[in-house]
Amino acid sequence: MLSIINATKRFGSIVAVDDISLSVHPGETVVLMGPSGCGKSTTVRMVNRLVEPDAGTIILNGTDITRLKDDELRKMRKKIGFVFQHFNLIQRLTAAENVMLGLLMDGVPMEEARSRAMAALERVGLLPVHDHRPSEMSGGQQQRVGIARAIVAEPPLMLWDEPTASLDPIIVREVLVIMEELSRNQNSAMVIVTHELAFALHAADRIVLMDSGKIVEEGPPKSVFTNPASAVGQKYKELLEYQSSTMGNSLIGC
Image 1 (tube, rainbow, N blue to C red):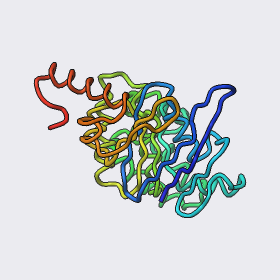
Image 2 (cartoon, rainbow, N blue to C red; image 1 turned 90 degrees about the horizontal axis):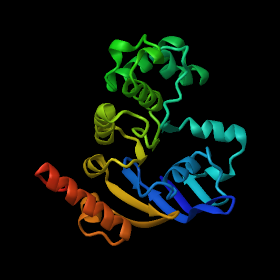
Image 3 (cartoon, rainbow, N blue to C red; image 1 turned 90 degrees about the vertical axis):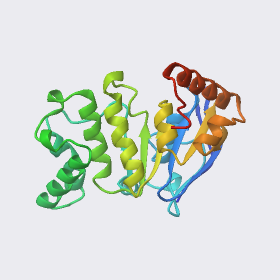
Image 4 (cartoon, rainbow, N blue to C red; image 1 turned 30 degrees about the horizontal axis):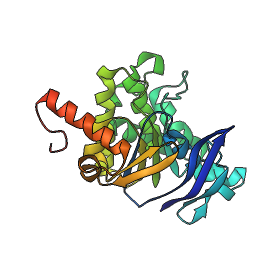
């Protein structure tokens, strides 16, 4: 479905992504993890060319995204849902209007667009505040509007760029619950950049660990975090063991 082949991105003298290759299968949830600055966000942003790769090929359902002209790229982006770290909602629009805007721009009739937007808001638990503007909602609610906006078109691929990073820790859980539910019941393939270990263990089909712009390890969550083959994986294992000891149970076994 999605194939990233020998992708590289440099920012001046810094190699952010260094000749990586990754495949994602239909319906699969892949979580990218690793230390800050390792290239995770750059990788997902290259997929829909929010960041232009310097080299490599990115193929979605047989189409080489790196070769698309502007008009073709705009059409392709409609098939890729993207959940940003910083919401990116239009402040003058209500939750429902933010979610339905993309559909209206694609020529979907008003009543159908509104019906689909309301259904997407219901999936993320926001139907009661569909008429609220972003300033009237919490950060967690605003991010859930962003999620509804990403899923309303039922894209075959969804990209998540650290969707809980800008949220207060107290309200992170409400977004993670929605993400985990979608990972189980959404038909879309998902590529998720996150530092949330417990979420990755429960929701991911595959963990991909990055370090210094390279993929250093990948596999099922329990395998990666129980018997890591990389230095980064070992650090995550130690963190999980510490969290388990302080919580009095095993996160890997739960």
